[in-house]
Image (cartoon, rainbow, N blue to C red; front, side):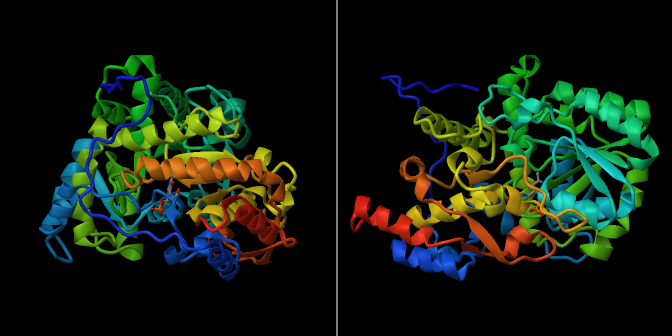
Amino acid sequence: MQEIKFYKGENIPLELHKVRVVQKLHLVPIERRLEALQEGGYNTFRLNTKDVFLDMLTDSGTNAMSDNQVAAMMQADDAYAGSQSFYRLLKAVQDVLGKQYYLPVHQGRAAENIISNAYVKNGSIIPMNYHFTTAMAHITQYGGKIAELLYDEAYKVDSSHPFKGNMNLEKLEEIIQIHGAKNIPFIRMEASTNLIGGQPFSVQNLRDVRAIADKYKIRLVLDASLIGENAYLVKEREEEFKDASLGDIMKSMTGLADLVYFSARKLSSSRGGGICTDSDEIYHELEALVPLFEGFLTYGGMSVREMEAMAVGLYETLDETIICQSPNYIKYLVNALDAKGIPVIKPAGVLGVHLDAMQICAHIPQKQYPAGSLAAALFLISGIRGMERGSISNQRDEYGNETYADMELLRLAIPRRVFTLSQIKYVEDRVNWLYDNRELIGGLRFVYEPPVLRFFMGGLEPVNDWPQRLMAKFKEDFGESL
Ligand code: F0G
């Protein structure tokens, strides 16, 4: 990647795009933000964006599209079957991901549903580097269990390990020995492992996993939702690939997997998703499930316009100047917060910046959800909406007991090419203020807890009047400022 240096040595990310369509944002007063939290059960998923200033909930379906993507949407071919838009998308999947067969689905979790439906049975064990919420929910829904096999380093907040998403190979062998290959329908590897802070795996690690999968004749499934950014970090951090193109790195990864699935809400900055493979057998095992759950095989629940945007977006994933934008902003914000002593996941990964609520809210017990509390507090004092990635995002075990998360994170997503650097500086400023006033943040408890994926629609309340006290301190320090 060509570096652009500043004359006086300032180290800031320079945008290699210009903004041509904009959306007005609203920063509402703190009193309204408190009401919005109360109305939304202190759950940032339940906020209305009219109350949100910087929406850092997710990078899923919230990325800026390019002019070429928007233009492509205009030439979509509306047809239930055999749409030309599908064939353009198929070609893009083949060119970029290097797999011949492509099954379209409406988003990533639909692929997880189909894969789990086809392969997971009661008693199945799915080894993975780490779970993603929806992947785990589908696997357990079909009677399976997951085994998370990261190295210990992955759980360290303050680390310089370049590949915290690597699968622990010794543990993988061990789990296969214990449960037997026949109970393991597939091994799942997730690119840029989301829930531990967007941390990549190395191509070498994937090769080693492949060797073990071959030894025991187990399928290897790759969740490629964040593969572009994983490839970018491989180029930066894995010596062998420093001169390789992103396209070649991505194909080195997809080429090692029997089955690749992805959410196009991340990969390709569009919406939709897919499953791809080179195996006739896998294709035929899954094919019938697409019309059953999604739609006909040439649209899979997606609109043809989105398919056109996805095809262009996939090709744009090969462009380093496009892929580097979000990781470079993340690196900038991680470095800035770290310099102030604020605990964030290091090294900087992809998708967003992850604040360590376990340390920031060390005074809040895990049963009062420190990461959820931090998410609510940050929204209150700034209008910045992040996402809890801790125990609220976990599911209860089969006996109904809480399973506390390994890490309590507040994720501040940086969708691709959406924010400006001054907005990122605002995030830095408000997180800094909140950190200095962290003792005022209190815990939360559930008042409404849905049985599946509770974090989406669950409702909580503060354990005491801490939000009012935090608001009072904000007004003391900022006066009438929003
Ligand atoms: N796999 C990974 C690694 C993901 O990050 C996601 C979604 C999915 C699968 C499911 O895809 O949303 O299209 O159904 N991640 C979003 C997030 C929701 O905010 O991190 P989906």
